[in-house]
Length: 92
Image (tube, helix red, strand yellow):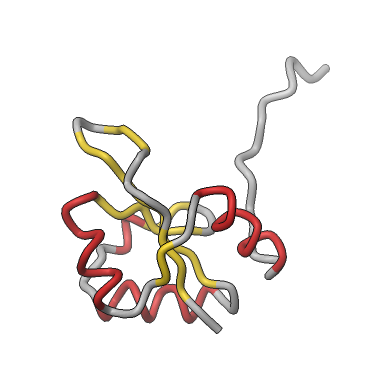
């Protein structure tokens, strides 16, 4: 029962981002995000996007620092991974 965060190495919108996940449930993840003031719009499929300037806030609130591969492994093992839908070409 834990919350994990990977390093802020993901670029987007002129910032660097981390991902925050739970290894238990989306409810635990949403509760953690609310506790640190992350907006609901930061939730994407199975994680919260966290800007680098908020990384320390998440860690101080109890998020465990792990590498990106470890974060995905824990999310997948928990059965909470929701991969992006990939367009597979024209249907019909």
